[in-house]
Image (cartoon, rainbow, N blue to C red; front, top):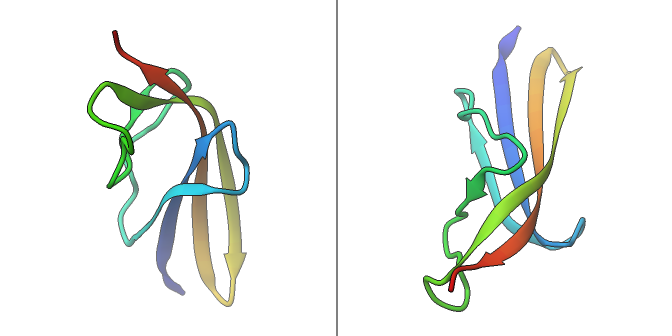
Length: 82
């Protein structure tokens, strides 16, 4: 059996289609929970006064071609600091 493959997708605020970041790893990512600040590479787009907050976190587990897959999808909202 192949090693487990881990993927993480972070979506743009309010979107389920536009990705803010996509990452793959051979080791698990740290736990992400609703309410956590998430900073994909290249974010924030408009300066340091905004960040993303996780609003939903979904885990998908499965097996394909003898490889276990764990995919985490994070939906977000933008938070602007004042």
